[in-house]
Image 1: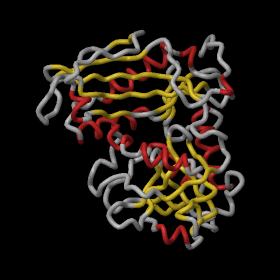
Image 2: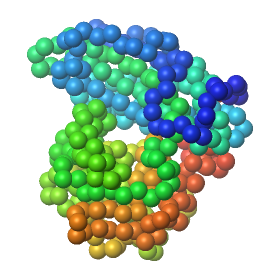
Image 3: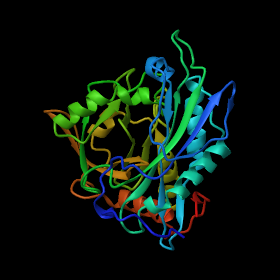
Amino acid sequence: MAGEKKDLDWSNLDFSYHKTDYSFVANWKDGAWDEGALTSDHNISLSECAGIFHYCQEVFEGLKAYTTEDGSIVCFRPDLNAERMADSATRLEMPAFPKERFIDAVKQVVAANAAWVPPFGSGATLYVRPFMIGSGEVIGVAPAPEYHFRILVTPVGPYFKGGLKPITLCIAKYDRAAPHGTGNIKAGLNYAMSLKPTMDAHRGGFAENLYLDSQSRTYVEETGGANVLFVKADGTLVVPQSHTDSILPSITRRSLVQVAEDLGMTIEQRPVTWDEVKSGAFVECGLCGTAAVISPVGTIVEDENTKVEFPQGLTEIGPAMKKLRETLTGIQDGALEDKHGWVFKIQ
């Protein structure tokens, strides 16, 4: 059972860092990971010559812990986060943290911070952020000789202000990822380059950018922090795919596709051109990811003369996105049957 909770205004939490009781820490040296342990020290001490500072060896993950209706604390598909983080680490010549140890570390740190897992029905969750950095000293261009793995947790509210109010995107003038580059891994370097376009979008009154492929600038890829979904007038779910392997493989997207299949929806996973979007082919649009599950998109603006509105999701979340979101969150919360064994019980 979840037990006593911290005295917080759970329903009004924003998406920001709140220091909790424990983090999990492990270190890699001389070819092996140490045993790892929980720590109440939330600071990291590194040499000025640590690899993270010079050659950006950093990968991370994001998942959530929830309190279910019966008071249990659960996580959602941590095995897939472990696998994706291992893939990210391999791409950057970092040692993968073993899958079973990753899952166990998530269990340890969430259980140790059970009082910080928001109560059922509050709309808040405990965000779980595993990350790994090159901690050993390196001055030549090479992988670091040592690595630091850590999991921090923090209670959070909605990712976008306004919750399920449809947001407005703009077409980014910048590129997100090079063809066959690092767009398909979850590394800090991908997000550093997105900061300026994101802030430019915010300064222009937009919630986020929609990136087109950098090779031809004709295909829809994703936003700075989420995959994109579309719905046709006949209810078909269309999931954009990349010709050049530059879209992050979202665990939430993968889960929503399975949910759509369970609901009997027709699904198309294929490249989607921006021209197709502009043609009015879709009646709903949404962003999907761990932080928001689904955020409805009402409008996408290319320039002052080109604006695409999604008629069934313009003022409120559309029916297909609403059904998908309610079904997935119902599975996560324990209100609906977990047919696929996605929910991992912490305590």
